[in-house]
Image (cartoon, rainbow, N blue to C red):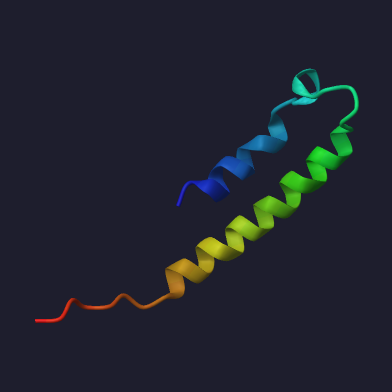
Length: 56
């Protein structure tokens, strides 16, 4: 799953020029940090789910 990898790369990107003035960069950074942890946990759970074999 590529989503955790995308969130891992985002801390090196400066998003300040893209944000409107009313939105603080700290709020965006906090959201991205939480999303990174949630995506990593979700991907780990998906990897642990056993696969089902199709019925014959």
